[in-house]
Amino acid sequence: MFKHLIWILLFMGFSSDSVSNSTELYYDIVMKDKVIGSLDTHQKTKGTITTYQSFTSIKTKLLRTIEIDYKYDVTFSKSMLKKAKVSIVVNSREHAETSTLWKNAQYEIIKDKKESTLQDSIQYTTVLMYFKEPKNIKECYSEQDGTMNTIVSLGNHKYKKINANGKENVYFYKNGILHEADIDGGLVNFKIRIRE
Image (tube, rainbow, N blue to C red):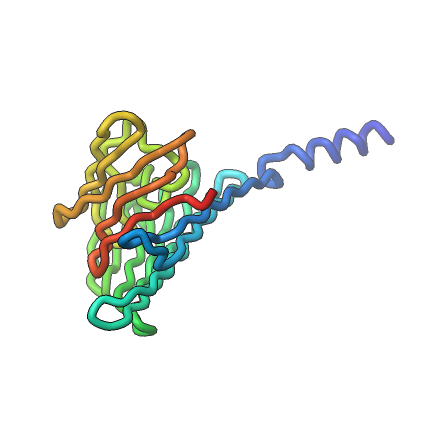
């Protein structure tokens, strides 16, 4: 009886549904050598489901003070994107929102209330670029834009991501995770640097 109880407890402890791990990364947002914000991103895996959350807050003064907040909520199942939601708030007002949902063997994308679809399954997205160096990956899905972006390896763990409008971001990796990036944020251009 006691042996059975031990085996049951061991099995429960090692079953894939109960195994959970998480990673958190923290970055500074830098413009002209001045920290203007922060980016916190979280990855959590339980069984076959991996969720990602990313929060970016930027405050800077151009002609006037601009406050920008980005929020990403992304879910993968068995390495395939299942859903994503991105919201951008500028000076406390909703600026943009994009949602992506795998449904009926395609992605339903709603960007600022405009609907589109994408047939191919997605294995790699922008939020993964923090946690997984895009080795041998040629494209990634932008949860923010609802489009596929091109990834070009520049060698020495450096990559360029080109979006559908031709804007380019450059990413630098160490030990498989993102350490620094040059970002064309649309409203502002900035660097992100990992907080050591």
